[in-house]
Image (cartoon, rainbow, N blue to C red; front, top):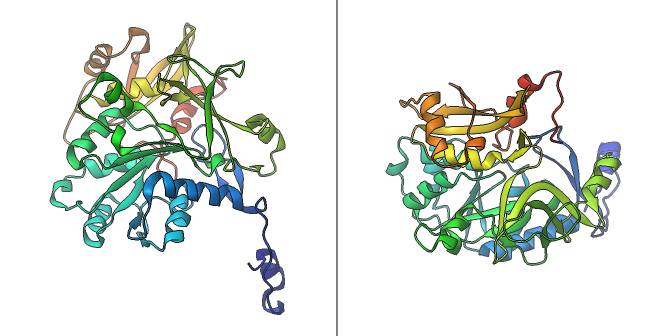
Length: 387
C-alpha cells in the first residue's frame, strides 16, 4: 500500500514506491456520523474495524460470488461500505447509480437483474410510493436490506405484501463499522403468533463475533420489557473520535461502545430499539418514545412521511409535535390524525399538535430524517432536559 501522505507531499518527485506494511489497528479512514441529533463527529475506523465487519456481513447476510449489488445508498455511508468490501472478497458484481432516485432504482434493479441492495427507510418509502412501482419486474431481488434509522412497521408490512419475504434489517452505527445486529428474512412474518409478528419492530439479534447488551443506568442487563441503553463490544468498535478525546472517553467505557440508543429485549433476546436517547421526549415527567408515536401515525393511509419531536412547553416541559407530509392527492386534518393516533397509543403519547409540510422532510446525505433541524426553531435560546 502506498502511503497517501507521501504521495501528497512529494507528488511527482516521489521515488519508486515501496509497499507499506499496515497493522490491524492502523487508521483506515475517517467516517462522519450522520449528525441527526447533533454535530457530526469524525469516526476513526481501523483496518480491523472495517474488515471484521465486512466478514460479519458476509456471513450474516449470506453474500455469494453470484450476487449483483446495487449501490443506491451513498458509498460514504457504512451501511453500503460493508458490502463494498464483503462482496469484493467474493468477486461479486457491483452496480452503481450516481444518486438515489426511486424510478432509477426500479429501472436498474429490473434491467441489471440486481440480487441485493440496501436502502434506508426513507428510500424504501419513496420506492414503494412511486406511481409506477408495479410496472417493474423486481423478481431478481433476493435480499432488500434496510437500516440506518427506524423502519416504520406499517411501511415494512406494505413492502412484505408487495415483494415478499426478502427484507433483512441491519442495525448498527458508524462507530461500529457499522453492523451490530441483524433481523433475518425468516423473522419478517406478516401472519403468525403475536410473538412472531411483533418481531417486525425488532432489529434482531447480535452478529457472530460481536457482543451486544441492553443495560440500565447501573450497567446491569435489563429484563424483558425494561428499557436500557444498547452497548457493544467487538473488533468492529472504533478507535475513537477524531480530535475529540472527551467524547471518545464518554462513548467507549472499558471497551464497550455506548450507542445512545434506547431499547428493550424479549424473552428470546431479540432487541427492540425504542428511540435515540436524544430524541426521547419527556412530558410531565413521562418518557415518550418518538418511534412508537411515528409508527402509530404511519398507519393512517394519508401519511407519507412523519417525524415526531418534542417542543418546549411552560407547563409540561415538552409536548409532542408531529411534522407530517401527506401522500400526493391525499389530505387529512390535525384533528383526524390526533383522533386516529389516540386509538393506538396511550393518551399522554398522542401528539398535541400537527404541523403539515408541503415539502419532503429534511434529510442527511445518507437519507436519514434530520429531527435536529426540525427542533432547532422551537428550541432557539432554550435548553432541553434530554441530552
